[in-house]
View 1 (cartoon, helix red, strand yellow):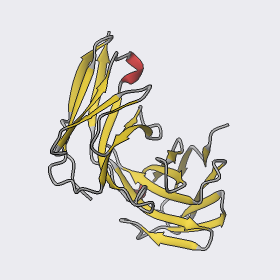
View 2: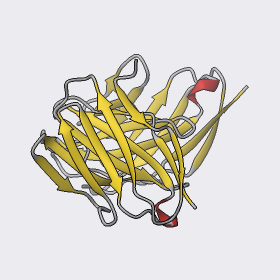
View 3: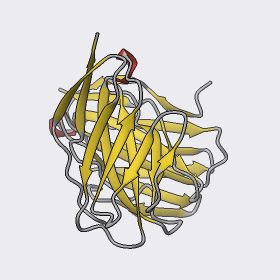
Length: 113
Length: 111
C-alpha cells in the first residue's frame, strides 16, 4: 500500500474552513484515498474516500490532484467537535483490502474558539 | 446500542495473566479485525477474519490469539500478558464493500 505523509498538527479557528493536506506520491492506480478521524482515543470514524474525482458528503469534501499524488480534506465550517487526529490512508480497491492497513501518526487538528 | 461493542472498555491486569477482549457486532458483516494503538502512533493490525472458519495473522500477531465464535463475535486473547502489551485495542467490522466500522476501544494496562 502507498505510504502517506501528513503534517503532525494544525490549528483552525471555529467557523473557518480547515484544509488538511496529505501526500501520497507513490499511490498506485487501484488505490483509493481514505480519510478517518479519531476523537480523543475513541474508535476511528470514517469521513470520506475517493479514487480520482473530488468527493463531497455531509461531513467533508475531498480534493484529489489530477496526478493523484496528493489530496486535501476540507472541513467547510470547523466546530470544536472537529478537534481530532485525522488520518489519510491509501487502500487498494479490491474487496479484501479494507482493514488490512495501518494508520500513521495522522494530523492533530485543534479547533479554537 | 452501538453497532460494534467491545468489552471490557478498560482493564488492568498483572503480568503473566491470561486476558480476553471481546467484540460483538450487529452489522451483519462477515469480516472482523483486531488492532492495537500505542500512544502517539496509528493503528496496527493484529488479526483478522473473513468468516467463522477463517483466521489470519496481521502485522503484529506474536503474543496474541483470536477466536471467531460466531459471525458476530471475535475475541482477542493475551495468553500471558506483558507490560509492552499495554495499549488501546480496537475491533472493526466490514462487509468488504463499504468502509468498515470501528468499536469504541478497550484500554488495557498490564502492570
